[in-house]
Image 1 (cartoon, rainbow, N blue to C red):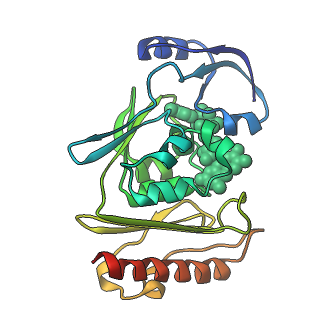
Image 2 (cartoon, rainbow, N blue to C red):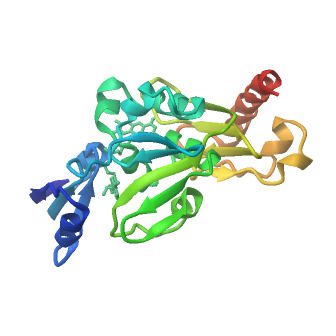
Length: 246
Ligand SMILES: Cc1cc2nc3c(=O)[nH]c(=O)nc-3n(C[C@H](O)[C@H](O)[C@H](O)COP(=O)(O)OP(=O)(O)OC[C@H]3O[C@@H](n4cnc5c(N)ncnc54)[C@H](O)[C@@H]3O)c2cc1C
């Protein structure tokens, strides 16, 4: 994607002003936008808004939308599943630039970090639109003309993320994340559809039963049956890890 003009607001009020009266695109790390075709009048670069931070506040983790995947990877306060999910993404060069905000707002069905955030029951805070649950945003058609400010979630007791890829730099064939705190949440993504949450987990006793109602489809990376089989193995492994955290 090309821009006729790129602005770098230093306050949110300035950013909102820039969003008026002109076709614009918000720029996070710009990594995915760079791959897209077309030309837009204005690019609004968020890098001067102070949105790159990771904080722990009253048991909740708050991550600024401009925090890079590399900062997440190096963090010592984030749950294991977040770190494991970003380690799946490209190389260090890419993770140095790509942001968590761009990863959420892109709503990519292959997303690794999206699956982890859905399992973490994350909430999103937008500048104009306020707060909403990540899963609601991910599955809606809204591509808001808004700025994602922050992603937050309650710190889980245990969490584990696994993805299966044909090779290191490929998108996941399927990915799974389990978190446990007040309750256990399991998200399955890259099916190749967007990540979903497994329902009624208390009535199911093993990985096969847990995944029975999850829909897996075929694409050039693999068949639906293959995805299901890989997902069952990964979830069994996570449940075995669980024997050590109970
Ligand atoms: C080669 C390559 C391989 C990749 N492999 C994987 C992978 O294996 N797994 C995986 O999960 N991801 C993968 N990704 C995606 C990557 O993790 C990021 O999600 C992606 O680069 C977008 O992040 P960004 O900061 O560059 O966003 P940008 O390219 O800047 O923006 C992406 C979209 O989000 C919008 N946006 C960005 N920030 C905000 C904000 N704060 N508020 C509102 N809207 C915003 C933009 O307008 C745009 O529509 C890959 C990307 C590339 C380029």
